[in-house]
Amino acid sequence: MEAHQSLSDRSLDLDPDGQSNILADKAVALKNFVREKSVGAVSTMLRRLSGKKDDIGDEFADDENSKEVTDSNREGETHVSQKACEKPSWNPLSYFKFSRDADDLGNKVGQQEVHGDITQPIPMKGRAILYTRLRCQECKEARLFLYRKRLRYVEINIDVYPSRKLELEKISGSSSVPKVFFNEVLIGGINEMKGLEESGKLKDKLDFLISEAPSPEAPLPPLSGEDDVSSSGAVDELAAIVRKMKESIIVKDRFYKMRWFTSCFVGSEAVDFISEDQYLERAEAVEFGRKLAGKLFFQHILDENAFEDGNHFYRFLDQDPIVSTQCYNIPRGILEVKPKPISEIASRLRFLSHAIFDAYTSEDGRHVDYRSIHGSEEFARYLRTVEELQRVELQDMSREEKLAFFINLYNMMAIHAILVWGHPVGPLERRKLFGDFKYVVAGCTYSLSAIQNGILRGNQRPPYNLMKPFSAKDKRGKVALPYAEPLIHFALVCGTRSGPALRCYSPGNIDKELVDAACDFLRSGGLIFDLNAKVASVSKILKWFSVDFGKNEVEVLKHASNYLESADSEAVLELLSNTQLKVTYQPYDWGLNC
Image (cartoon, rainbow, N blue to C red; front, top):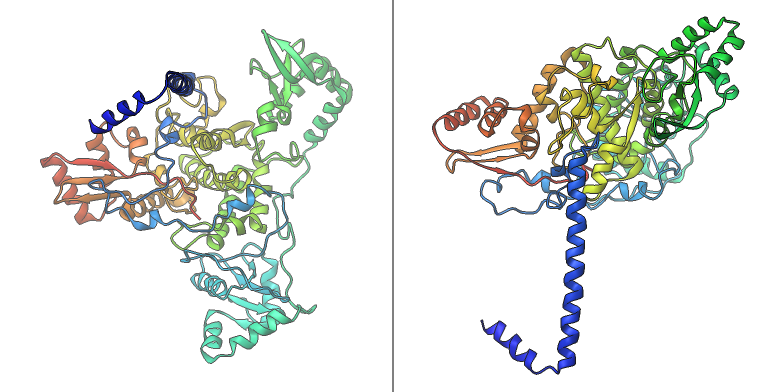
């Protein structure tokens, strides 16, 4: 009351003109405030009503959730793991956001178990080479040792580069790894490096590396495309015909059913070309055109038919406006090699993912060295491999193959999106990352949201959306799993600190691997019970996708508790059956998992 009184008294001292000015300013401010809030409310409502495909739910775009996680005083949230709240001072995306196409920034930096400030590598004239292989614990220790010594190094994984295994045997007498070379000098493995450090001789080796340039006898870094089979394969004769067809027929914007369609060609003109080029009768030319369409070189602009003679409009795959502007695995147009079996491509993607996670993530899979991934040959090879997905066939994949393939693709695609666009800041950028960064797979476009909600969740609506990702006529619906797989939420990693750990998944062991991922996530802070206080602190992932785990909150908690330690699980189930449990949801940390 005193404060209000003092304001009133003060206002009485003002002259009438001053009062008028104040009232006018307040009116303008109020008008601007109402306008701003109205625009925001209307745009939010329109987004919700539009049900735009491939969008994530509004819950993901909540401003409250976009804030960094801070110490929470709310009951049930005080036990959340501190690891999720750490904020490294170095953001690798601060570079990529402004200089995406720069040359290799430096060699690989092992970041395992290292948090806090990142020291700069020591300037040196020489070259350090580290030979490794997949699933090698001593290799991880060697990476960490070199990183702690602030040494830039080039890693040569002999599983990724098989020819280098022979080289290693020749220059060292053995193919065992890890092995470190300083220029042409063999230092040895992790035990030899620790021995040199303990004896004080490592300093002389480091001085040599810093001051001396590598001699011609020193091992060389891998060359771009070395031992890479992604660009190899038989030339597709049909692709050559399609290339010639593009040069011969008229491709332009056309009006059809009250709409403009860009970059279309007419079916009759395509039949004219095929008939002349392949020396076929007109009916035979139509059948040949259907064969080309079946190989996903082009399709009808509204998918009304496969291919027909007459005034029907078609569009080449790489000239589709969404493919050409939003898909990042078709940078050079349609590949002209014959599509390989999806099992072969999926195997190579799994292999490369494993190599990248081994070399550039922490041992627990929760911290990613994006800067080094960006400059690595493994990632360059991954980019070449995903180009092969353009016209691949997915129809014959089993449930296990689809699960492993699409989870691995999602996780690498998220890394690719972050490296291209930078880490999303705020709800609008997150919506763009999940919905607008796409790959073309089997002739269809897939965003992160389409993979998660359309394929892996059995075409379920994203959280707080009105529409399913795929319509009844959408070809992608045939690829979708028949029902939602709840454990995929503990395997999909979109680059956030509150998300699961990065892992690689294989079709032969996918169910056990998903159970392991669920156990790891929920036991590491994703689900915390205070049995005495009767409070559960739960990851918001279980709230956003609760429909995949149960019909209500109790069913969701019962489902999730199955992946806790057996003693904890039994205590929780007993608590849920006998008492009322208070549930609080942990704040989601959208910060980058670097």
